[in-house]
Length: 152
Image (cartoon, rainbow, N blue to C red; front, side, top):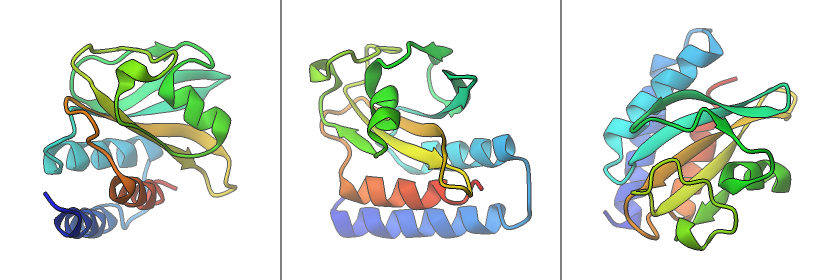
């Protein structure tokens, strides 16, 4: 899919999710809905899910795909790197990322987007893996950051 098609798909997904999440609801339910829609609408998403901060630990939240690592080792991997650097991270080849946590060896690229509450505090991340190398770009980052804004 080219950039224009991908941008259009993210706009449609955002609109669909905005409608689905229009009423106030439980944060975990909102995350589960977002993950389900993204995972089934984006062909290059192999694993799609949230990791949530809980008493200083990063634990698996709602996700779709193969079984997840339940607890991510502190300050290791792409998810912690995003939290520690306070920004979204795109990794074209996870095998070259220092300290990458391989929950599934079939993952080859990854994007991690910060999840922030209404006080702009990081509460977790949206983590998406792909079997393809270099699967994610700025269009994915922009689309996923906007979608994560629907949770709070």
